Length: 182
Image 1: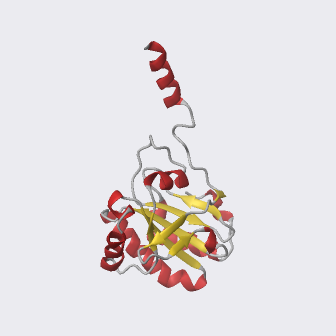
Image 2: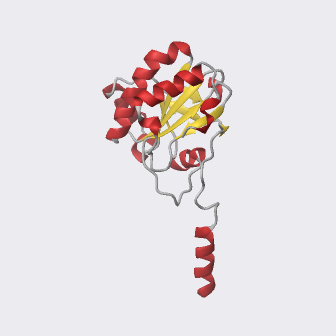
Image 3: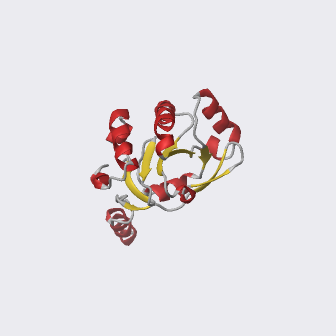
C-alpha cells in the first residue's frame, strides 16, 4: 500500500500530469460538425486569423463572450478574421438543437460546433486532472500557429474586448511581435 501512495504522489508531481499549454505552438486540426450538420475544420482556415471560443452553452460568461466575438467577426471578418465556437458541455455534445438555441438566442454570427471534453482539453493542452474555467479562448495566426490562449482559470486579457481587438488587428496586419502575449 505504501508503494501505491508513493506512485500516486510521484504521478501528481510529475510535469506531464498537469500539462501546461505553451504559446506559440502549431495549432492542431480540430474537426467539428456545426448545428446545421456542416463540417468545420480549423486547418481549413489557413490564411485567416482564427479566434476560437471553447464554451458551455449554459454559461453566462460564454454567452457574453460569444456576443463580443460576433461584433469582432462583423468588424474584422472582412480583413481575414474567422471566429469559431466549440461547445463541449455534455448536453451540447450530442444535441445539435442545444447549440442551435445558443446561436439563435445570442444572435451569434459564427459557426458553433461540438466536441467531447477530452478532445477539447487535449487541444488546449490541459490535463484531465486540471481544474479549468470557461470560456477558453485561443487565437491562431494566418500561418496556423497558436499565438495566444487563456490559462486554465480563463484569466487573461483575451477576455477584454479592447485588448483583444488590438491584438487581432496586429495579427491581421501580419505582426508576429504579439507572440509573447497570453
